[in-house]
Structure formats: structure tokens, C-alpha cells
Image (tube, rainbow, N blue to C red; front, side, top):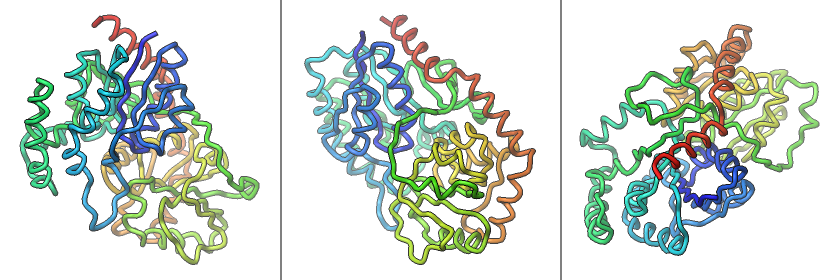
Length: 389
């Protein structure tokens, strides 16, 4: 039995894809120490892993709120504190290998200190080549001056303390390849990219029953044509006006609409809408006729797995690229949230219920099922560790 250190960026899009991987590792006898935030403690412990908290709030992917800065500069300023705390936690534990979110900012530091085989988990796989070029070119990003100011003294102090090499630029902290890199999609669905070399394996989407127990009135869905709407957790409260468009589009329709609106206060919800902060998504999809999604990979994977037709309204991050790829494969209609109208949304919902869209969903799903899943990922990890050791 090996002991695994897992360092995850504490955001749903980063943690959720890894839970099935961790469960499979534990099933095959590995002991996993999983660092993340309190939000995910129960989900991590349900896999059989040991939960460990970061000493500060490490969520650099918090829900976006206009006028509020990204928390990355503050996290960078605390880097030495975070690294020291992780090392203190494992000081009497032999770590056999390290797994980390690709975007976990201190993965390269811990990797150099521990000198163990390293596996990177990619929550994002679209547009990485362009992003890496922009970061390495030294291009100025919004808030980059603030990050540079926070980074320089911290980087030099860490180099001196641990005898390691820090990246030249702070945003390079978010691009952490491992000896092995796990991508949660199929090669068929992933866009062409120069980013992927032979160290990357495509294992299919992160389909995993997290055993979520939520109080939800499923009896109200029986015999109804259900539309499911979810804009995820990161961008869901960025532009609240979009929810009024949803109301206008379907309030007088024969549909029953279930909408996940994370941390969004809404008034005057139509009678045919059920609105929750969270919903049991996979269970809900069994009743869903058509979905409207932000085109995040976790949600899209669930929709494709259940062959639920969907309209894509990407809001940010890699969502426009994922939506474009699904559209290219004939599996969705993509709408612009900045110019969205109720009429356009109704037309798109009608369009994606045509048989051709479902047929293309089935093609993508078939490529997912042939990709190998979490058992393939674990086999590749064991082969890597055995080869290096």
C-alpha cells in the first residue's frame, strides 16, 4: 500500500472530477491524504481518503462578483505559510507519490521538495496551449501588476528556504504538468491542441456517484416535461439579469422548469419554476427533457452521459471553447448571454430536441465510454510510479 498526497484547488470544478479517481485508488489499497477546503470534507471522506485542510482559504476560483478582485495575489503572499503547513502535516509520513490539480499554485514547490512521482489532474483541457503561450510571453493580465508585487519577495524567500527553483512569473504557478497528466474527456471530444504530449492520457469524463442526499420534490416531476437550467457555481451570480430571461421564456409554457441558482437571490419566481441553491443533478436528469447549461465540463459530461439534449450559454473560463466543440460535433446550440432573448432561448430549446442532436450526443458518449475511466487512470498511475521507483 502506497501513501498518496493529493493537493486540490478547492473549487467544485477541480474537486468533483477527482473524487472518483480517489475512490478507485482507495479501492485498490492506496492511502490518500487529500488537502482541500472544509466545503469538500464530507465528499472527500466518503471516498475513503483522509481529509486535510489548508491553513488559509485556498479557493482562487471563488464565484465571480463584479468589483471584487481575484484572491490569487493574497494566496501568493501566503505561499510560504501554506507550503510549511503542508510539510508539517506530512513530516512523519512517507509520501510515495503526489497528485495535484493542474491549477494548484504550489504544486511545483511541493514536487521539488518531495522529489516523488507526480500526477496532474486537469479540470480544464480546452485552450491550454493559447493560455500557456500568453502566460509565458509575459503578457499583462488584469491584476498582474498586483500579483507581480506579491510574488517576487515570496518566490525569492521560498527558493532560499527550500533550495528549489520558482517559476519566473506568478501565473505560471497555475500551469503545473506532472510526470503523468490525466484529462477527463475522450480524445474525440478534446479540441486539437499542441499542449498535449505523450504524458497525457484521456480517460473519459468524471462520472462518479457522489452519494449526495438532497431533499428534492421528485414527485412533482412525474409525467412533466422538465427543463433543467444550471449556470454552475463560479459565474452563476455574475449577471442576475439572465434569470429574468429564463422566467420570461418559460413562465407561460407547459414546461416544469428546475433551476439551480447558486447564491442568487431571486424574487417573484413563476409558479412553474422550482429554484434551489443546489440540486441533485444526476438524479434530476432522469426526468429532464432538455437542459440549459453554462457548458462547464462536469455538467456537460452528465448531460452527455444521460443523453439529455442541451442548449449552451457559456459565461467564462473554458466554457466558450467547450460549447464550441460540442457545437462543432453537432451536439448543442450555443447562445451569447450578452445578447440573449427569451424568444431565441425558446427556439434553441426546440432545436436541440431534434433527433440529430441526440444522435451526436450518443456518438460523444460512446467515445467517453471507450476511454477507460478511472480504472485506466489508476493503472497508468501505478505503471508510472513503478517505473520511476
